[in-house]
Amino acid sequence: MSPLPDPLLAICPHCGAANRVPAARLSAHPVCGKCKQALFTGAPLAADEAQFDRHVGKGELPVLVDFWAEWCGPCKAMAPAFAAAAKVLEPQFRLLKVDTEAAPILSQRYQIRSIPTLMLLRGGREVARTAGAMPVEGIVRWVRANG
Ligand code: ZN
Image (cartoon, rainbow, N blue to C red; front, top):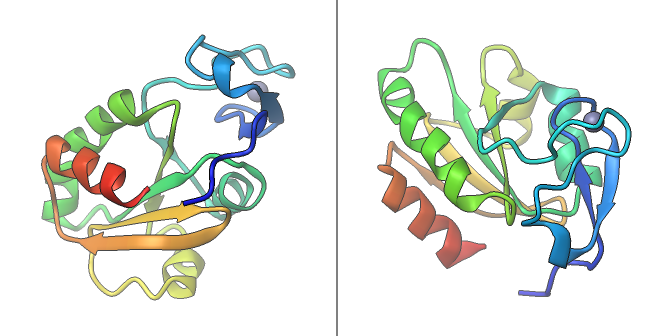
């Protein structure tokens, strides 16, 4: 696994601005140079297609995505675990939630066949995926093993 760029481009979850952050400053609660809000909130970002493309395509942090839907019981059951995983995995990872009903283009692009599906992307490319609900320890272990 190649090391992350340093400094790296972190996308603001609030306004979408690309912020250049030295690796040593990632954990020091950096704020967005444009909107002055926290670059890391300890929570997943509900991303539409444009936000997804910005974080995955422009941002340089590895991205963990939860593909889910409102009608999917296991997805809703896993939501608290995914939220808790954000507190553990930020700021080394950016966590996104993609509602497959609201962003069918993304589930089509990645051929999501069952949900919940977790996908890990690095440098804009998928490096791992897994389907089925997991507890927070399982999510964190899976991400660290693959990312
Ligand atoms: Zn911002």
